[in-house]
Image 1 (cartoon, helix red, strand yellow):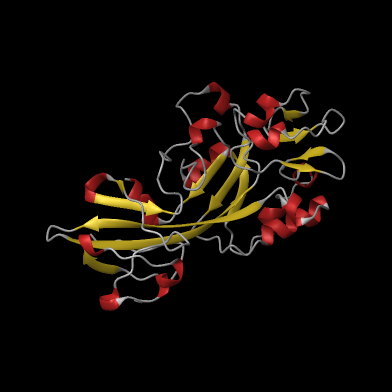
Image 2 (cartoon, helix red, strand yellow; image 1 turned 180 degrees about the horizontal axis):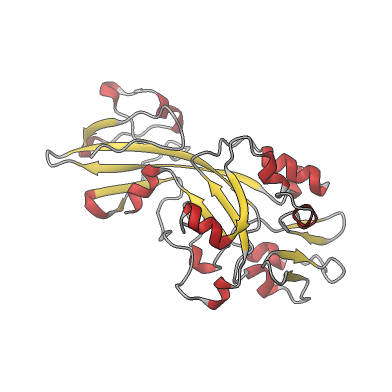
Length: 277
């Protein structure tokens, strides 16, 4: 079955016998650099790829080294998750990694780049498929993910806060920091599996995305959503986002969704979804 790369245009497909997989760097993606067009890897360094058995005789590999269960965003009927009302949709197919969302966040919050509530990360990988004649075909994919606080139903940051300085807003489920209570200990930043809680050394308090509370109260969208030139970010009631975009809540390199039940919906590259089936 032919599988096309998604999330990064122009990536070639290579075919060669399974026992002749070669070593090369990520720079080799865009050209058939080795004899007979053999090229084999995508981890950002010259290392041998790591393979994981997938269904249907396929093998998956990527910069994370493995895939975890990413389909679905929470246990069916989970009361804690159902209390989460608002969240984000992130389209990893449309995102181009321009960081307009990060710049808008910094301007709105008046913080330097390293304290931005939103970050953009990238991921690359590939899918092997073995044909009946013993040859393997490889499909490569690469994509960007824009991530901020995911306003989880079971926030790890809030669970470890000894001062009760992190709270969820009633009715929306959005996180906020009570600055007067925060002692800047950093436990919340260490506990967050997404790495999106920061500690502002200037004021000794935690910095966390509140989805631009003042902006949305004025009837607008969060500034990161408004700034995205590719329409890759959306904000709204999580049920509406799921109805429009599905219920996928984790793809590599994000942690499994059932750890904290993030208020997140993702659109993933088709090649990645094919690898996970």
